[in-house]
Structure formats: structure tokens, C-alpha cells
Image (tube, rainbow, N blue to C red):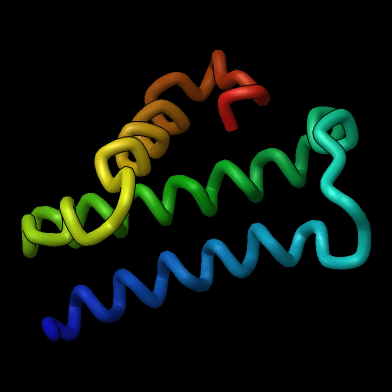
Length: 93
């Protein structure tokens, strides 16, 4: 496998693990999430990383668009977070 793709897959995994770690010692609570600006920004940043890595993977090897479920939707969420930064819906995140 291409080393760059492996690196980007690793980045995706690390971002997912980081998002998971935010609720490690307590339950996920949407209302607490909405009130915690730092948590929201951290989640959004990790979603940007995941989407950008996915985009790079697909550009490098288009077969991953089929191999990874919802790859295009993942990239779309990244674009949403970056381009509508001033109107991000917590419900969509």
C-alpha cells in the first residue's frame, strides 16, 4: 500500500480516537457539547483533518471511494465545517 495513504489513514484514526477521548470519563451529552466552545472547536478541527485526509486518499487512489463507506459524505462534512464556519449547526456536527 502507498505510504502516503497509510499516513492519511493513520491521521484519520488518530483524529477519531481523539474525538472519542473527549467523552472518555463521562457520557456524551449533546447539550453539554453545545455549551462547550473549546470542545466544539476541537471536534470540528478533527473533522476537518478526517475530511482532508479522506480527500487526499481518494485523489491518490479513487478505489478508496468504494472501499470506505460514505467517503464523499466525510469530505462534504469537512467542506461544510470549513466553508460555513460562521453558520455551523451543532446538530449537523
